[in-house]
Image (cartoon, rainbow, N blue to C red; front, side, top):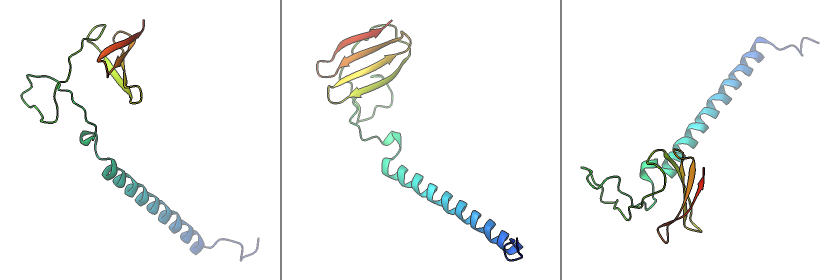
Length: 119
């Protein structure tokens, strides 16, 4: 290795400076993407979905955007209805009832239970 091939203190300093610049630019780009995503998609409370369910008719604070459209008893106990998934094409709502280890298939068009699967 010749003297020209050996890194000097200035070269090492320049390399470290470039690494920091790349890290800072990357962090700024990440921050911009996160802020833009939040502005574009908004917060979960600002959902544009036309959901029409009221938690309790006797609630002291009732929003003008919510109304009860149906009160339908579901099979099993009243514990741990954890997840719901809607198939908009078939208008079926899949409701995970982990308290009973079942999945209930609810038909939104007829407002009836189509199936109850599980143990």
